[in-house]
Image (spheres, rainbow, N blue to C red):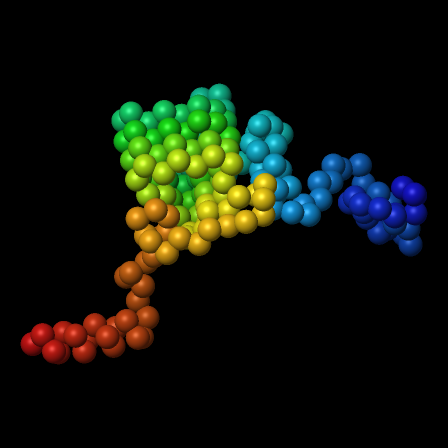
Length: 178
């Protein structure tokens, strides 16, 4: 099987032959596989180059992170760039937080992945969840909740995006005010 290039793995085609390379291959067939693979990599951070700086054993942070007083962090945790953790938050291990994320006060996160540009509202308790903008995903039952109330979870929006329609709307509003 292996010499024929049949099956799963990483292969190289060279000199008319397909050769299996001796690298580990982890197929991702479900959201649960994705969830588990992220934490496997987080636990083996010495084997991988993660986008962060090592603060202490098992705690990795990015640039411009703000961690307010009374935040409890139990490793392993990965915080990417521009993460803001409000007072009273608890990261109880196996937490991955993407870029440009705000976690409001008194939140409890354990075994969670929070995607980039997300907001987690005050007092939320999340265990074994993936948060992506306004979706809370449960990787074990392959279901999600779409929350349209920005008080709980939401995406971070750039209201000052300069484009032609924004400038036109701004000028019309300015003329009406004058």
